[in-house]
Length: 298
Ligand SMILES: *[C@@H]1O[C@H](CO)[C@@H](O)[C@H](O)[C@H]1NC(C)=O
Ligand SMILES: *[C@@H]1O[C@H](CO)[C@@H](O)[C@H](O)[C@H]1NC(C)=O
Ligand SMILES: *[C@@H]1O[C@H](CO)[C@@H](O)[C@H](O)[C@H]1NC(C)=O
Ligand SMILES: *[C@@H]1O[C@H](CO)[C@@H](O)[C@H](O)[C@H]1NC(C)=O
Image (cartoon, rainbow, N blue to C red; front, side):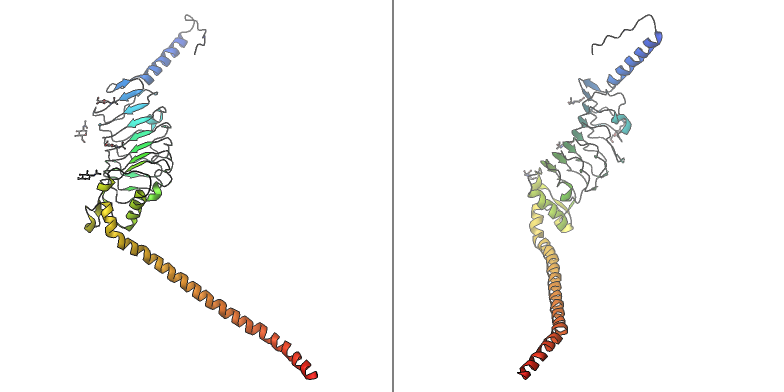
């Protein structure tokens, strides 16, 4: 700011061309995509039937709303220049996003809404660049049947995760255990498979400070006899079975332990006995004999 640039206006047409090009570039970088409305650092392209990501988004944009369009993917390169982006709403599109490293450059992103799309899988790379993320909305992705346990490993600041309305049948507590700031985890309306493994997860969730909206109304889909049952009722139903399941493991463990102790004890006793017989017995006899002789001599 405020530098005095000694340019002589008459001298160099080349300089003028460079300046003009520069201005054009700045203008382009700051121009609003034709379909969208721009206000300060916000670009709003809601419901414009867009099939492609707009290319002329100002590089200083902080909030980008692309909700309710027909986007099928998010272009890695175009997005990687939006380094100032804090808020990205791509809800209600047709995004499949089969890429791994999907969000390079979005180092300041705190809010990401990908709800109601066609995402199918989340890997440990998908959100690995988004270390500032506070809210992640993945609800309404029915093709998403699985999330890798390491999916949120790099998103330690997450406070809200919405996984409702997806195709998930199982989640592991491990996935969330290092998200110390997590406050809300939405899981309703998924085809949960209420076996002992999943009930361990739901037990964990009820015993943490993390809130799960509508947990009371979250239901099982599998196995068949549990269909429509709330997770809480399913837990009661399965209590005996899951308890037995755990007890069986404990029982086997105890049996093994008992066997080891018994076998080990027997072996040690036998060895000690054997050693005693082999070692002490001749010594005792050798020691005894002269004693006897001494006695005899006396
Ligand atoms: C974006 O635009 C849509 C309609 O064009 C409007 O309904 C919505 O409120 C706008 N969003 C924001 C955050 O301004
Ligand atoms: C956008 O997607 C909707 C719903 O999938 C579809 O009905 C519509 O024809 C699509 N529009 C365009 C322009 O592709
Ligand atoms: C996620 O998005 C859905 C619909 O787009 C919305 O109803 C829900 O409230 C959002 N969840 C969060 C945690 O913002
Ligand atoms: C659960 O669903 C019932 C009936 O659909 C409703 O009356 C109740 O308010 C719901 N509970 C919660 C906590 O949303």
